[in-house]
Length: 136
Length: 296
Image 1 (cartoon, rainbow over the protein chains, first blue to last red):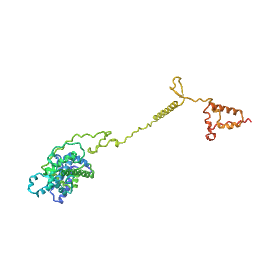
Image 2 (image 1 turned 90 degrees about the vertical axis):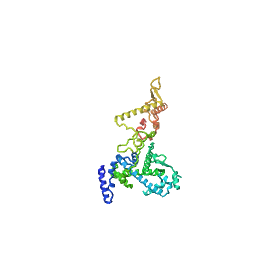
Image 3 (image 1 turned 90 degrees about the horizontal axis):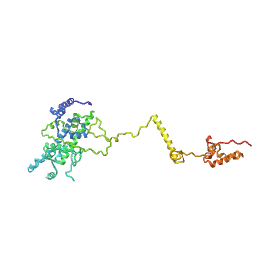
Image 4 (image 1 turned 180 degrees about the vertical axis):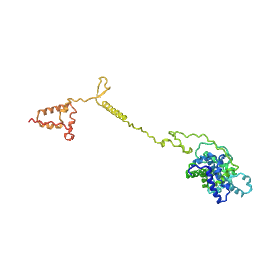
């Protein structure tokens, strides 16, 4: 474990783990594809959060990023996290606006992220936010 | 209804603004307040704003946007910390994909969805801003050059402090141990002491000059004139005087007379003799005892 592992070796380890998973649950095999393949595709990919920004925050946490693909993997995970929360908040605001009458129909096209949509979306993830509505 | 009215009066940012290139300042802190955000924080704001636009929002409350930016920063920091901990647990210093996967699982992320998210159609990419030239910190209080990092330490860690704070250099000179140098030094010191002492006595006491014209060229310490210098050896001590007075002899009278003469002229002959013979323990210091005359 102390020596450096090749991607193929790690890929085989993840594959054996995933084959066990497939035996236990009936998951489609494509979702159990190890991330080793995906990391190789990250060579040319540019995530929305720039590499330098992610790299800066990782350095502050003590993470020595030698491989830029790993940095991109973490920035993609963070992006996905935020996108999921934003989607949930959008669902909440659509539920809220569907209950209202049609007279606000013109303004409904402009969706605004508000705290009253974000709070229940975060509560589903276990994050409880309590912010003051206005500054005193 | 009232709530919507209140929300509309709040400040709203149009998200399209943040997709432009942001100029960086030289603020190094990662977090910073909302009044003076660091450049990294502002890049995160742009990225989060673009993600919200992809989701379908056109505007966002500043408080909600700040919440999401804070969560992004915390997520990245926690993922990095957790991944490096997993790597260290396995005895590695370089982080591998497996460590990152374990860290993401710890945080409750479904990592199998990540490739799906990466392949979304409406992803937006913006160029990170070019860092402007940073003004170097003033070197007023810096003494000496800071040491460079050894090769095993990455550059993003803080630099070494000023070398004088932790490197100790002795400020004394090694003393000379060679016999020749020490002997020379001892001899020259002895000579210096003698010369200085004689000069001091010559300047403060009576001097006898060699040259008639120049009195101060070569001052010699003047000798004190003692009249009849051989008298001191011949005369007995003063304490022996009562014994001599008992014996009625011419020699005793003569000696007494001479002693009186010597006392008036010489000043230092009787100093040693003034000591009482009984208090002197050293036999060599006792005054001479004259043989008693046997002429009766």
